[in-house]
Image (cartoon, rainbow, N blue to C red; front, top):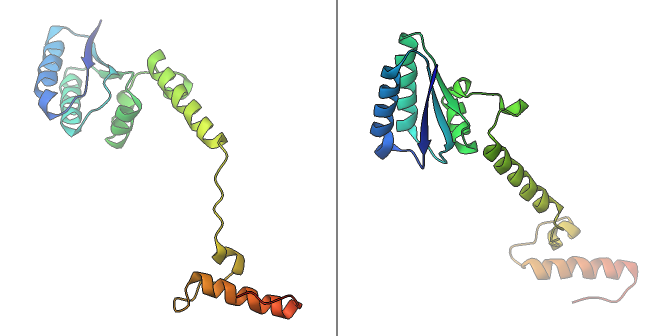
Length: 161
């Protein structure tokens, strides 16, 4: 038997006590594993991570397991940093994400592909063409003009000023 706890909205220090109470009640209900559904949670902070760790330790002492279902990308990163990624049900690499999370991921990929396909604006920098940084005493324009006039003089063209 599995007990599922659904959580919605941003979870932070203000909601940590309520989540801890719900998880404690779920642990007291039966002898099965407890699953926390995070599909509707866009944000968690350290207080929630602490509650999850405490609940995991409580359930392990009863020979039970805590599992996390369908975390968002941000929540997945937080869990990864905190070393709790092995609590997540399914393997994201083989499509273990819920359909909503999978759709969000695909949408972000499409937006990133569109950004990469846009033509880039080219900015011309005179310092790159001349191969030298402008002289601070003369300024960028006068240094460029000085180099251009000496090369034109050497080539037999008119002199730029």
